[in-house]
Length: 87
Image (cartoon, rainbow, N blue to C red; front, side, top):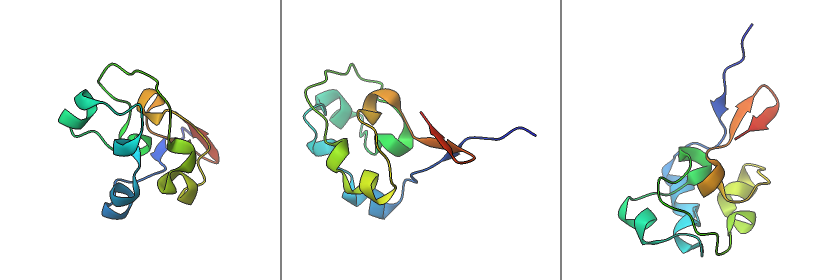
């Protein structure tokens, strides 16, 4: 039996309103122009990433969903396969 990866964080109005991505030091004009947000749910940026800092560790969305990563804008969405979380 094959296990399919499932999104851990869903793109809901609540998660979008709590998302700190737009306030993050790594968030730039390209990301803003493309309307990118909630990388832990929607996936990595298509923009060139300059790591100037990361707010993921204090993001309410990350804390609420029990995530423990950084730079979702680089790694992409968190998915679950069974009890295991993967990027």
